[in-house]
Image (cartoon, rainbow, N blue to C red):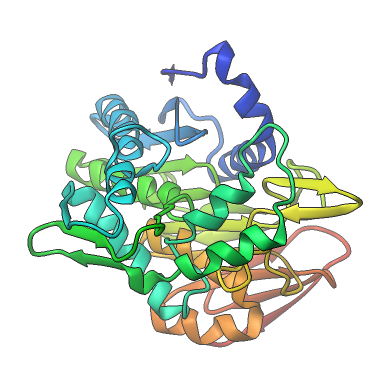
Length: 354
């Protein structure tokens, strides 16, 4: 059974084209996650610049899918700095002034973002907005910023500038010019929202994919593990590198093939190093992180890409996560206890204990 809700209008197709690599990767993942089945309720909606794809099992699946589609849009309207009157827009506008009371959902995402920022030493940093907005990878034709502009804005980045109080759901930014961009955690947080709805609805199983993040709930009807594709970062969007066999969890991928532009023969990707203000160069092509929490998996995927393989291992261990690293030498490193099947030619694979 299929349902399609709030698909993009004609006006949004430009945005879709700009994000096609991410979307097609999500579609690939979903194809391997669950085959078409009359026993599952399927739904597709649109939020956070991506398709929200769901396949749900159990009584109440249709209602849960509808509730999830609405809840993800609500979350976007809270945590996106681009949305007028969102919590993020209000927080960024009030930078350097007062503490603001925010929605509890916003505070939770900020708390999860800060936990990864602290564990990674700022390799993932939610306060990167001053520089990420300068690069503006979501523009139709992004251009390379002037180095002087980047250097001028770097002092405004620092997760220690973001302060939250979970007791009264308040937050503040210490200085004028600080700004929060939750783009590196939002889609994972959307998966968390979906999984909570599935649990409350008493579903037996379900899958939600939002861009590069996937949430797995319960179990498949046949009792076999969920199968999640890891994309070949140097192949077409529909080319798989391998497959992860998983129980209920969340999976997020960050790759240098996403949101890129080329200028003067140099290709720039959107995974910025908060310490330099430029795309991270650690010899990696992609990182896929598995964790029980979607927001954490999303932020960790960015952090690990910025840190590189060796420096990521202690962070993954501290956060209780596992990961699949793909480097420029076409070597795949599986960090932690993961059941990974390599399916692509031209790659080698090894296991790294945490």
